[in-house]
Image 1: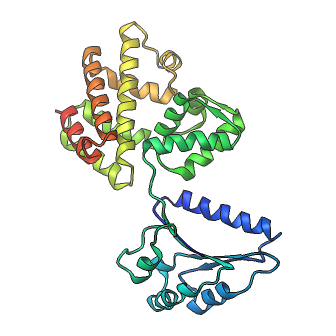
Image 2 (image 1 turned 90 degrees about the vertical axis):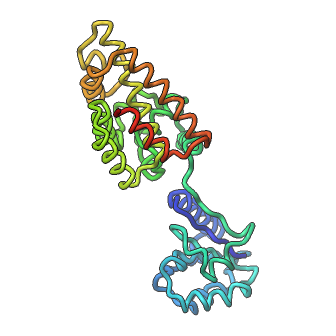
Length: 313
């Protein structure tokens, strides 16, 4: 049997490989029937030898070749391309690529077959939030929708970091709440988002676009940036409402709005540039654009450009 695993979502890809390894180690009482080879340095003859080896006291053996298509030599790939039809039924030969190889390559075309290949694409916002709920449950914790939403806003699409943060939160208290997330999790792009929001609040279009493009160039997901902008303007609306009611203390606002004191202080400075009616109008507009992005009515990148131009005008 041959399996081809590839894609940009390296967390889920690595988790898949880890699960497969654990299965074979458990079945064989050790790693006797497991071989892991690095595609960058491995020779085709070594892969062939491992694939043809007979399993010891088991029905099959697992051979994993990592990043052969991304990093391996062309001549070694060509030899493997000629061999893959000869893989015995007693071997599960897995080609795992931490990225997307050149789809025009001969070996890619031979491996990328239905029921044999699986591409691990980045999850969308809905997929990430579902994954958060499942991971918390796997780690014997509890979390409601508000907590999932808060954790996504703070961490974004990085499943590696999300796993670590969930472990930390569950260790602190198995019941994860927005308050414990505020207490223990450092928002990934809070300061950068505040720089963008500050430029928007000062009606600086050029600076706002520069800050947006800097976030994008740093690899931030477009939908995540949009979610953070919506999140920050929501905070501004809540804080402006408190200010209208005579509450001006950063610490009191942090407590009443369930915000980190740092976020409350930054937001308090920003809201002085807007009145409540204006923020309500902006927040309604942002929600409309957020829905448009998530339902595919318009490309997220286009929405971000238009948003920034509109809010800074």
